[in-house]
Each structure stands twice: as structure tokens, then as C-alpha cells.
Length: 170
Image (cartoon, rainbow, N blue to C red; front, top):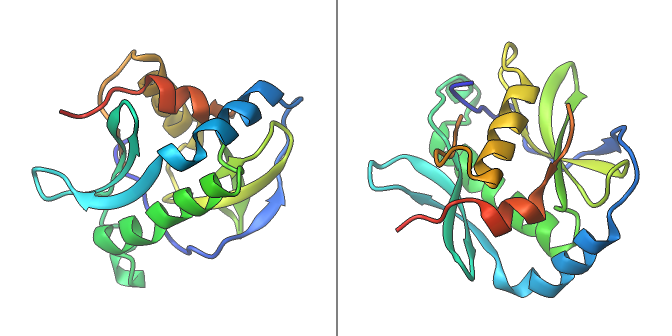
């Protein structure tokens, strides 16, 4: 669970399998839509990072450190600049209520769901041996406060809970 990577960043929609929807999360999402802004910025060490600015403060979601897809034209800075607006677009459309994993073109991806059991919109692709469950577990631990470290590099993560509880940066 060291690095996230990006192979292709075309917005892709396909089905993911889960359980029932939680309408209170959709209501909460619509109430804070205009308050959260996703962006790519280098952290104090110069690492491209996907952040979300919430009314609580700035939260680092992903530190883009992997060099895996550089040969394909997707270095860390490029991936950050491509994925951060994907978060914003999906969030603005109310489709970023959960994070989950799926598979596209034989590769694991992390995707956004508007509801459990809904369509899975690709956010980014993982390296071939990267375990999507590990990434989702790490993001879930970040949301619950079990860890304060953003992700470097099976069930869905409630993204609204993540926004409410993930630690903010000073």
C-alpha cells in the first residue's frame, strides 16, 4: 500500500455491485456541495497532492508519489492535475458519496458511487499488483481518525463521512 498510479483517465461508467443506498448521505452531500473544493497542489515537500478544501480546513486525500506510469506519460504531477478535477466534477454532480473499487480493461480502479449499488465512475487506475481493498481500508481509517496519513499512492468508503472526519492540515 505504498503508491497510487494512473494508467488512463477517461471518465468511464460501469456497474459496481453493492447494497442499498443511504439517502441521508445524498441529502448531506447536496447541503455542502458549494463548500468543498478539490484541487491539486504540491505539499511542503513538493509532492503533488490531491486536496479537498472543506469548511473544517484542507484535507490531503492522495499524495501522488508513484513513478509507475511515467513511461505512459502520466507522471505524478500529471496524475494529480487530471484526477483532482475528476473528484470535483463527480462531487458537483452528486456522484461522490462513496469510494469503491472496480475493474476496467483488466486493471483495478478506484471509483466514485452516488449510492451503494450505483454506477461506478472511475477516478484513477491502480498498479497491477496494488490491492484496491488496502487503499479503501486506508481511506476508511483516515476518515475514522485511526490514521492521520493521507494515502500514498471491497466495500465502499462513505465519502461524506470522510469529508466530515478526516484530519485537516495546518
